[in-house]
Image (cartoon, rainbow, N blue to C red):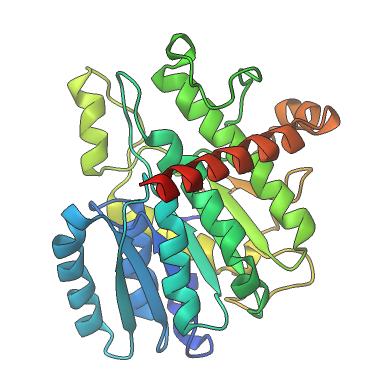
Length: 320
């Protein structure tokens, strides 16, 4: 376990990083883990250029948060991008806005998603299709950075068996809250592994943060569920900033961000090259599930399915 005090000490060293780091946050709204990570990064980083995405209905409230961050660190430049990430077609707009102003991207944090307990919902888009679309389109900017990092906040290490005949869960008979969560997390890891194998300088962390006290967690209480070992949003954000900046989670031979704190050992990557990290910042071994998928080339099937969904979304947009 990485002690919180160790995380806090590491985060103070973000201030020693070169000025002008560029970061994109998708899902850093609604008082969640992403917002906490954004706050801790913005407060410490020297003259960072940050882009944060908010849906139209939450843009005003998020802008108030960003204004507060600008005051807490006057060297910070933060740009609000208004877009709905439940629509895959909106991702191209987000990436275009960043590419118009930047020639590199150091850190990409994606934490979009929500918990739906009934009926069909857009959670598969916010948790998987949209973030992976963004990661794919951002590769030229990420590869131009000295030590590029993707932090995906979802359920790394908790991959499980999928319905391979209906990866998108389009058949209502196959959909459930649990199945949607499993498919999103498992397809996310398999696709992130594909990205890191093809971009060896890119460090990718797929994090399971555990229960964090956010407005979204209130849905658990509505259904009579009380998750154990809950952490505050502030601690979730503190640990998120650590995972996004510590060289403990850099691919071998490619550091460049905050040096690993003394006394900590290294962490293992999955067989496909992604850091699967638990709520305490330690690696999770889930090769019992993932190795079989790789051996049967299910990762390639997932990627083909993903590209097909992206193409369908683009076609629907063109029809409008």
